[in-house]
Amino acid sequence: MVSIAADRVSVSLGGRHVVREVSAALTPGRLVGVLGPNGAGKSTLVRALLGLVPHHGNVTIDGIARTAMSRAAIAQAVAYLPQGQVLHWPLTVARLVALGRLPHLAPFSRLADSDHAAIDHAMARAGVTSLADRLATELSGGERARVLLARALAVEAPALIVDEPLASLDPAHQIEGMELLRAEADAGRLVVAVLHDLTLAARFCDRVLVMAEGALVADGAPRHVLTAELLARVYGITAYFGEGATPMLVPLDRLR
Amino acid sequence: MTRRWLWPALILAMLVAGVLGVGIGSTSIAPGHALAALAGHGDPIERAILIELRLPRAILGLAVGAMLGLAGAALQGYLRNPLAEPSVLGASNGAALGAVVALYFGIAEWNAVALPVLAIAGALVTLAALFALAGRSESPLTLILAGIAVATLTGAGISLALNLSPNPFAAMEIMTWLLGSLEDRSFRHVLLALPCIAIGIVLLAGQGRALDALTLGEDGAAALGIDLRATRMRLMLGVAIGVGGAVAVSGAIGFVGLIVPHLVRPLTDRSPSAVLWPSALAGAALLALADVAVRVIPATNELKLGVVTAFLGVPVFLVHLMRERRLW
Image (cartoon, rainbow over all chains, first blue to last red; front, side, top):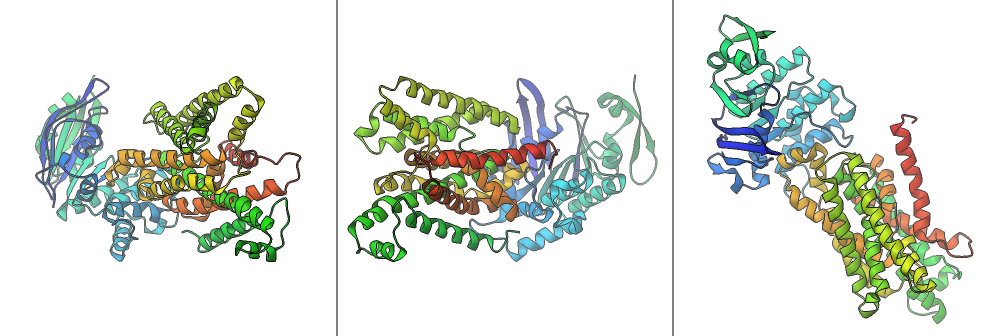
């Protein structure tokens, strides 16, 4: 089990402060949603957590400074699905998902039986087993999103960071995707998901981090955090709030 | 999956190319005589032709071809661009410029090692300039434009040397570096090039996993545990040392690194790592065969190797063009 802690993480890109002093301790077994309008710094924050972008402040993975860890060690601890992933070669789905085993391969060795089991398992859970022999570049947007999620799952890392995993999925597959992330968290993993769908985030996440203009403006359980006041302030929208055991909210109108 | 017959077929092609390279030439030597000569007896003239002329030439054809094929496959994988190739990106030209500088200023005559060292330096500078110009952009266009800029600059440098060359003989020699040839190469050249090519092959062939991970882009690869800076460093050094060493003896032979991965890729699972070694083998076979072809094709002057490979390279660009225009 892995926990990730960010301590006053700031990122400047081209002189612009994209992420400002964000601190958060992310613990195992949780599904954490990272919310916020476009350009709020969500993707940059998760890239900073992984050390993919130069930043100020400290990130620790299981109490160890990330800067002291090798790239390979980070890769084994945290799987990452980047936003809007582009595929550069027409690999088959099975071959693409197998890339997820790279962090575990010893030099000059082939995929072991355990690797094949992990690949098959990941494809089955993302529901792409039937696509195994198709070329990943020739899939529909939704199929490709699920294949890329399978690639991230195949790492079988104790922590999973996914950036907009639901983009271009239909409602059924969006819900299936959230159920999958929920199951990952329930199995004891730490799941951090950058999301745009407030309804799904409110329903499935244990905790949401809300960002606006690079700063963390709210952090907590969706029921407490996603209030009418916050949505108005951060997104400039109104929403319908349902009553029931699971939090439910539906964005309604733009505030003018 | 990689076709089962691919490796045996490529190794066979390499062997055939090697045997033809030793067996075929302007003087016809019967196979029996050739074997006797290679075994160390037989006619001394035939022995001299085989061992001192054809054997080093065949070895260089195979080695240089393997290096160019592998460099093309590695660069295409690293840059995620099927048009990347040492000569398209200016690395071969840079190495040729280094070689020309060595020849022009007579440095090559002081010390035999100066030629490959300057060729390697030329390739290294060119690649560094290329990566600096193209920046972190993943767009094929940026890279090709940067490649054209760098290749044009080195080409201009070579033309300048040609322009200022004191006599027609010097100009002819410089031309030879531009066109690429394995004519009249001896074991001295083999000794010069082979270590560089061996280093280049080891550096590049070991990058398979990093190149596979780069299928997911730079962030994706880094998140899979790939040290991108080290990968870039090894790749640049591998291409510069290997191609620099090759160009130092053969001149700038273009398009082998472009053609070969394209021929090989459809027969593999298309992942960059699966294309590396087969490209080296196919490159060796292709260049050795092309070198046999230039000896067989009747012409008043022997055809230069780079001319033949350039003709072979054009169809690859055409296929790409047709795919872009959706004609095919």
